[in-house]
Length: 457
Image (cartoon, rainbow, N blue to C red; front, side):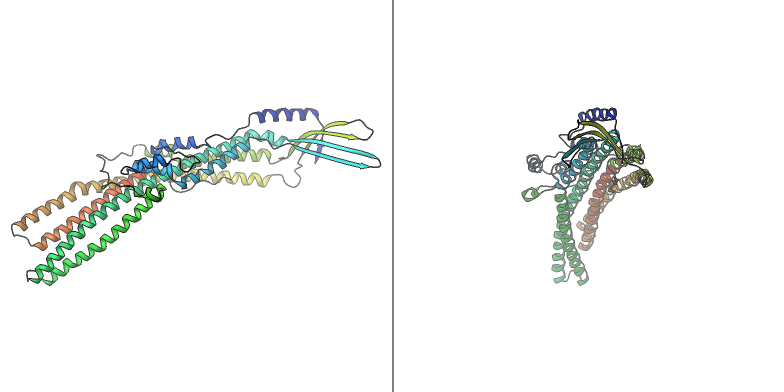
């Protein structure tokens, strides 16, 4: 180590240190959650709330659960009550702590030595300060602040993703319950037709083949009912997990039917540009690139010398006056010139740049894909609602008239009823698919994909 004595450098270091220490950042009262809540509300219309008291949100949750659950109230409950989301917010605290720590200088060092021999004693005292850390403090603070902002974006992305998952689970659960109720009606009708076929077969008015067909249809209806009941239970449990409910909270009521289709589908317009400006994964990737760029600058600035300490020294010896002085120590770049560190920082920066570009490309593509699915499912659902189901009803009415006029058999009437039932069941599925596609479109524009963009060096 090279040691120099200069009172001016010491006074400057101590003075600058006092200035920076006076302006140190401190931990916020909300841990960045207010910004996360604002980002989430701007995208899903619901704010995020979190307190350390696990039961603090119970009254609001119970109030929402006391009424039939809507998709918006389901999202609100999930954002209020999801333990998984609350656990993810702990990452905000880590990022904020790093940010605050980056704004503080390393504690000064104190040294003391005492040497005694031949009746004399020598005492050395010293206080040293990290000058390199002081000079790079603004840059380090700026880097960690950017990473803290990135952590907020990622936390908001998790909240937006939870909202999207909850919406999909809600529509799936309502559709499954609606299909199960419909399957129960089908089973009842199949059982009645099977009993009728058996009675008519006994008196010779129906063939064994027709009776077997009706019995087979009844058995299929029983199987379908069991399957739809399980799907209703499984989809409801999925929704329960996302809402974070347990105990009596699970006894919430879902509506009997899915929401009606909107009068007109939304147009794409500037959805791609909107995604690039609003998608949280795109914004987080940009923050990551900015942070790695700043880190690259810091690495280049400290590659040659990254240890630079200065301090005050005091020496006293037996029979001699006390001696005062100052000491400066710095690292001599003999074995390591910092080239490897700079190369690593440059590689990480280029990695971040390419990752940001890839995220933007995927964002635009996902918007186009999800919009295509949105329009397709809307057109199909509207086609079933406006054309297929009314046409099937018209055919059924005509067959019933022919049956009443003794121009059609009971078998024809029952066969037509089955076709109508299949159309109604498919209409439920297409309506469910539309609302799920609409949720995916909004997520592609506002939230992002499930890919985690975090790779902070």
